[in-house]
Image 1 (cartoon, rainbow, N blue to C red):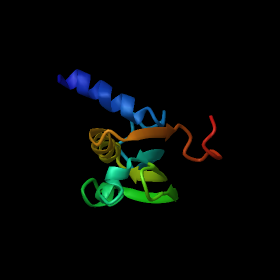
Image 2: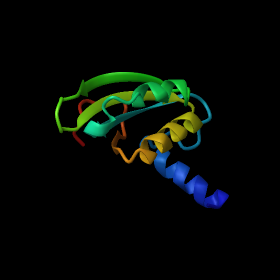
Image 3: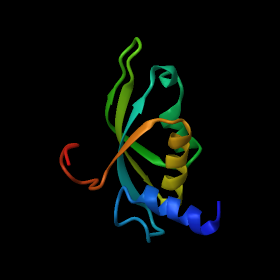
Length: 110
């Protein structure tokens, strides 16, 4: 992947919050991820902190035993680079990820 294409991928990921692309300071995004049953015993959320240096604020979580997938609503705080690396990690796990463009808005409706 060329540097230009890689930068485009970074901009697309950071597009979850339109004001993030050109900042080098700490910023915040809000996500909802769906966790398949086979990942529910894995430290997915804690690795965002320990491996990627992100601050994670879980605002809602639902895990159901059995074959159902769970979900986490949370805010990630860090530099754009840290957030991009954390999002890459979640994408590599092939999790369903939803972003909320306005981290300070009400609810999850658009």
